[in-house]
Length: 540
Image (cartoon, rainbow, N blue to C red; front, side, top):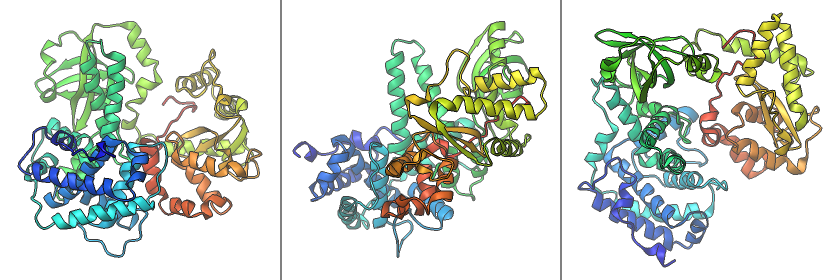
């Protein structure tokens, strides 16, 4: 315990802030932070905390909880926004806890229960920690005492507010993007989630590419990619959605943040320019874009039509802006051919056409075909070494029903292979290495889905692999595994919750009562299942 008594220093406190040098109030909050740490580690339940968190993580949690207090005092609206969105989504203030009285924009004991639960289940993912653990309750009460004593006298951090706000008349995308970066990667609430995830990825990149002269470019592009694509464990929202919520509907930029497009990264042809825009053609899809010169200072060096550019672009306020890294090369027919034949490269612009193509209708037709193929069932259970044959046979059957030409059938099959669905002629997937049996599920939002080691979550007549003794383990795996879809999990709950004993337990009932919140927490980006038309007769 000796080392745990060491105090927290200013650099650790500033690690949870969007600025690098201390401001006038940081000394006060650092002192308060050390009081929070002291009460956490001298509590009779502190040994339980130390079973799950190391010394540094305990220091960070003290900073994290104190930052919640500072947020409420200073009116930065990070926590208030979470409460607002949760209440709107679930008609209750917080998950898990029965709350009789709650004072918005003030400190509340259930807030601290929840924040400790969230922090511990985010910085470590080896074990799910229940929100009702006795040590969470007791430590929260002692921390609340510290905050109550400080509430009337704590100073506002006016400097902090500037980092989470933006002028309503701002049109510069880079300033708008910087606010997303501040919320996702420089706010206390998402520190244990999106910032630590970003840092883990950066450490891997540095280890793999430490001698590469382009390392800084790789790191910058990685951060830029995550800024557009990362979903938070809290409520499964993107950074731009959090910014819109923090600003509020009354702020004129809120609607513009919601409409920021996905980032398109890839190869483009240079097709010319005028006074305002650079004209680009996305090589893989053939789509045309106008890139505003306000965002791209390299336009003066572009001379030859069909010069190949690699870059990222995003749409803000009806203009396409450069975002990420950029380099150019001479015309290369091999690269062009590879791009035009790459399903992955074409798919990065799919979102632009989503409203034009009725994917739901296509998927509904496929679902009907799957049920006809599978004895009227949406889910099939089999030995793992039979999965590839089953899915391939379904694709052949479905394509035959479309009356396609032989060429169209081959193209459809090739697209399935390119998507990684069928593997390749030379490399077959060995599902049996994970589990002896598995399942094939038709997900109405994405298409065919394969899952392994979860069969005992489905007590259904056509499942000969259901084993009651494995049932709880398989349900937990279904919940916790990020790669298993929300739809498959809800298929289990909607159809079998009354037949599975796990859902009669206190833990099982807690999961059911908060299932949407928890699936957003566990599945993150995969909570939002994306359409994947793989084996229709038309290209996608």
